[in-house]
Image (cartoon, rainbow, N blue to C red; front, side, top):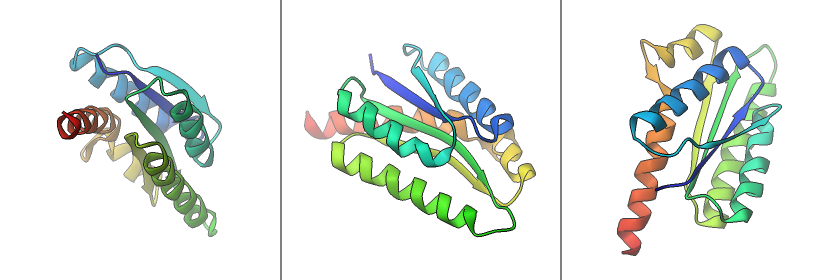
Amino acid sequence: MPKIAIVVSEFNALITDKLLEGALEEAQNQAIKTPKVYKVPGAVELPYAAKQLAKTKKYDAIVLLGCVIRGQTDHYDYVCMQVSQGTQDVMMSYDLPVIFGVLTTHNKDQALARVGGEKGHKGKYALKAALDMIKLKKDINA
């Protein structure tokens, strides 16, 4: 049975709570053990948590969930860059699927559309992506 950790940002909790609900629902739908959930203050902290979890070698994949909504300053661009690059760095350094389930939207409505609205559910998708990548890694290494 695959072991998955989920790290969720508490910032923009209206959205991130829904991302987490979707990921946990998908885990249940796929009949896998409920993933261990860790919370961090914001999106920038997601890669750090992923690295700490990767170092334990306890998990087959790590799912990162967060939401960054564009504001009136350049802060959005820096946060998105740091989180995406940090996620990639952990994935490549630890040879471990680290799923980027971070919404990067221009407004709250766009984010809501991606947590069960007209654009699907990114939380469910992220958990499914983790399972797909675990399977891919096993298939390649078989």
